[in-house]
Length: 237
Length: 237
DNA sequence: TCTTGAAGGATTGTTCTACAACTCCCTAGG
DNA sequence: CCTAGGGAGTTGTAGAACAATCCTTCAAGA
Image (cartoon, rainbow over all chains, first blue to last red; front, side, top):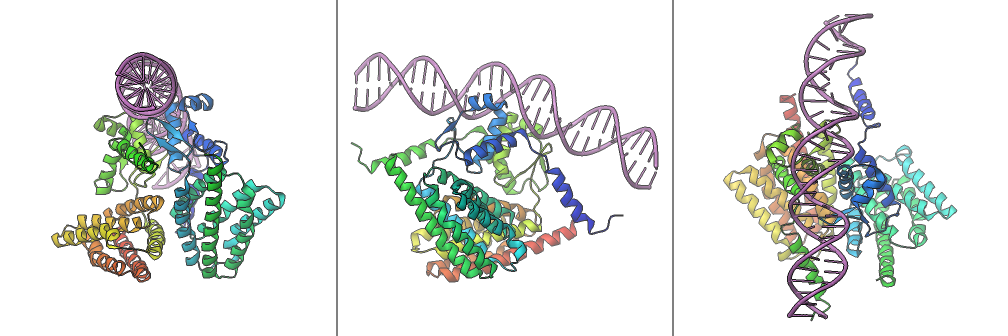
């Protein structure tokens, strides 16, 4: 006999089951291409040829184009009419734009936080630990991944689907910029310990202080990235 | 003889010309469907049949599906695998979510504003005037449109492409919620004068004060909308 | 009565082919 | 050096076909 409280539980199970192995071919193709772009295998400016990919992936052009659309709206590809899809080349204006939105969302989320406890902060803790571990190993790719995870989990504390989604796209785009730049250590190293410091502030419940630190943090990160971008531009016209 | 400064100008003209009448069939179809959804012609929950629309619009299924994808990523349609696309039905959680993100972005944008002058505020002024005009005529549909324009122009002051885009999607989704609710006057009337008050604060350069007022404003708006939503749910199980 | 399972029609997911529309590059001519 | 135009190659769109899935109906069993 189903009790009233069962309803919510059943709904959540239903949702989980339904989204378990539920993916279209287009989504799987998108997932594959996404990882390639995010890992930096495809340098910015690369054109993704339909003909070529249809051949390699063994899917129809329609399906491939559907995958293109998915990634386009994640900001991982750009579509130019009658020219094809390309891995985006972010310029300095894009960096400014991305960091502006990023500061807006992240700082505000932190400032509004309340009722924090160890359980809720657990995912953040894991991400920080992963970053420290990667730094010890000198694996700056992994350090970058851990950093992304830290910030994604940070905004996840707000408990908003749309904020999570916006942030995911934001970070994915930023990752493109990271790959376009050579020196990962200089970009990621300082933030391993700064993430730890942020987490400590949050653990202590000092949200206002954390928000302020995060604001400075993101300004520094932006400056670093822009500087590296300009350097690269100077070397590589 | 092209001077150095010409380059940027020529590029911008080239871009403008190129994007003038530059739209694919899919984009035109999307535009058509978008207006229908935004105007509320298609009630939430409606399924958009491929077969039917292909017949009416005289486009191929491929093209139609591409249009579906575009609108899906704007939040104006939802796609359920093997079931089709539907006009979304927002529940109260969605309203909470939308307003949370909205407060985050709008308030933060306002708080960061500086160097405001009459020229930059002109679009806001026009939107407020349009809202007042619509209210006098009792045209609450137009009042709602003017309100959306006001907020879109407000965040546009930040000068960020990505903030504009996120906001556009946000407001489009909210518009769905407005349509699902019967009483437009009660929802829009109070905000005509509150928009004017906000604009006055901005004109006076009181950004912090404006941000605080906006925060309250959005809380009130959210409460109003949620209440109306619950009323509707009670009448219409 | 309620649940379970199978059959069937209807709709979406994907592939394939064909052709139109457009871009890009190259070359001839001014 | 610049411009116009032609041709090759790529993307945009159409349309038909089939596979996979969903939804409804209905009958059998507990």
